[in-house]
Image 1 (cartoon, rainbow over the protein chains, first blue to last red):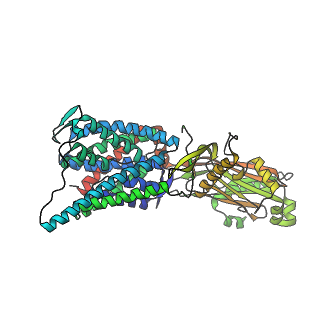
Image 2 (cartoon, each protein chain N blue to C red):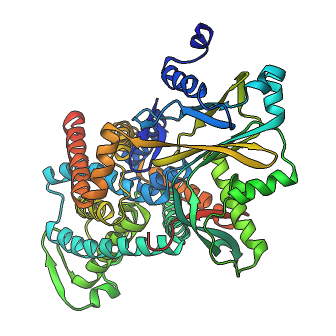
Image 3 (cartoon, each protein chain N blue to C red):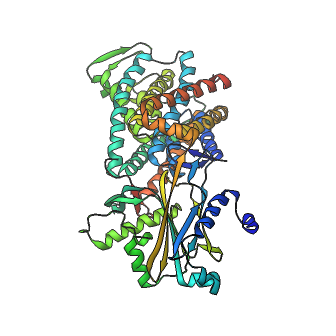
Length: 311
Length: 269
């Protein structure tokens, strides 16, 4: 069954895209990640113009982060003050990102920048996650032999971040830290949301844990809270400035995604945390390798037709 | 007439009748009379491409037909039908390997690339003289200038960029030239059936039919076909273009409702 996408202006197979939404939703439910970093490259591989893929994916993330944030709101595991500060940075970043997006598209380098950003971020995050989870699994194996119980490695109490000025108190997170790194992390995630079509959880969550030392029980809820509003803003800004949000495509992905996430969450409960992390790290590195290969392999077609400057 | 009725779809009947009515007049000069199967093609939600049939007859060749039938017509005349989409400006970029990474580097800007170009001819091969005729008329992909104004640049590389446009558009079935695609289904009735590809751009397309004899144009007709989105697709497109920000807000609202519904239905907790 084919459906004509009104904004992307091409017909797509409904079941293929529902299936893609479900598959990525399954992984995101299983690992507790947004899945934008998987979905956007998948959309681009399957022929959706990159500009439409990125903007539409932001719209889909609104749906998944909203339903996730609702759960955390009920559990009271959101630090609103921290979330709002991250959001302030995020809105600024998203605004900059949408403008950058437009400029890069006119310069004809948008696809390159999207690929480079993906390769570098996925490569770094994937490698770190894999390193950490393998290390943890080894320790656990050793401990099992010697009969000791190991706790996950807790990061040290203080780092250079805690020396910065403009300190604020965040009650829910029991933190007293500078506003500067919070705004900066928010802004970085906002820029990435606009350019890469991701929520940015895969960057924000480690940054909050390792740089800001936010307690793990409020990290996910607070990052979902920020992601939800940043992707809302991004969707509206992309729709207004670049006309690249395809509501039909977004809806297909949302429906597939929310269903897939349910099954993923159940499957995820059967695996251990470090196993999940190692598996996710492998997927992240796989996507990274695929995109990296495209950058260096000799393309079969050297030419592309793009929009004229100023359009 | 009855045989013809069985040959065609009912939608072709009225234009066909018109052709026969017109063809009885003016038998002095050779003149084309053509008709098309649709004046509008609607892109609906299940659109995956369509068909366009152009048919026509040549007035003033009754004697020739009486002598040699349609083979005599084909020997003497050439017919070309071109369906051209709206022109648009575009930049063609070529990747180059810089420090191991493939990056867009050289580019050539064209001001008028036909968004689609489908062409059919009544002949198999063309000779040099006829090529020149087509070039003068700018008929055929090889002779469409793409609106390149700056001829000062290196001619060879420009040709590469031009050829790249043709190649890329051919891959999407947006450009296609079919020699011998026009069939004479009767002694003096030809038919050109075009496959309108799924990616056809919306807008006014122009169908031009040429009649040639001895490398000269004897007659030429032209029709306009409007390809347009319809219903929900058109509504969404117009909305997104005219009220981008409000459209964005609606998209966000839809996402929130979907997200909320999923949390209610599946009770994630």
